[in-house]
Length: 159
Image 1 (cartoon, rainbow, N blue to C red):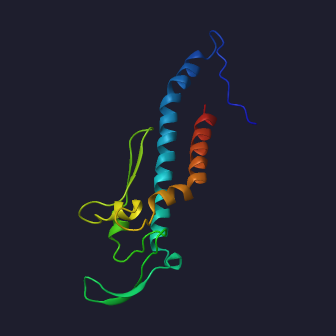
Image 2 (image 1 turned 30 degrees about the vertical axis):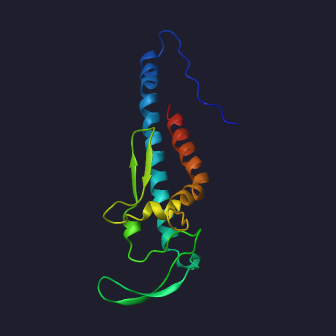
């Protein structure tokens, strides 16, 4: 097991440098956590996009759809329990992340304009559940821990 660096404070010897390092630890840790949040948010968004667009994983009904431009195409819907199948991309475009310092990472989908049905699909409100947000969180959980450890270790190694 690797030991954390120890700062030895010896009276009169390089104290200014050591005190400056100590003063910067909090700021550096906040920066490291923010970077981890940014990586996690990007990874989560990529996983949600993949799950929504993974046509091979959809097993629902296939039917003919007309696009807003008048084109017709075959669309395979998702079955209950699968991530929703992307038809026109509104749900995918509604996916947002927000980082609030080192203590908040907000992941959200849907709004009343683009995808008012986002919550209904995720939670199964009036329709069979088609989870995509929580599933993506579980899918990236191991990588989430890795990103936090990488950024924190990097910060500590620079002490």
